[in-house]
Image (cartoon, rainbow, N blue to C red; front, side, top):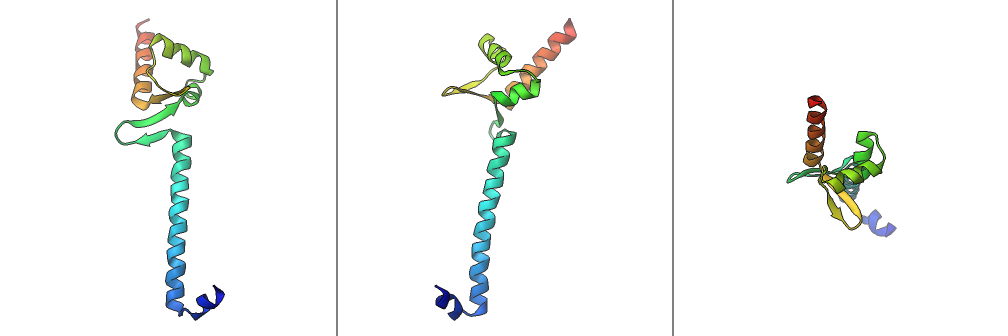
Length: 106
């Protein structure tokens, strides 16, 4: 391997290095996107961001128990995947809007 690299002229060596550097940058970029998706809700252009129950509880500054009650009562729409609940961003906004209106009417 070393001998083969030494036999390459400098231009080919540079191009080879550049190719591997681009692959490495692509891997780093995809890992960064994955990290952002995990930590800030999953984004998808067709339906917006997705949130997990922990995200909603943190947003509302409550434990997960009230969130499960809202789901059970039908006040907060969710998708159950296995034993986890996932929420569309629009559904969370609707839930907050509905509760804001209720509070204003009182």
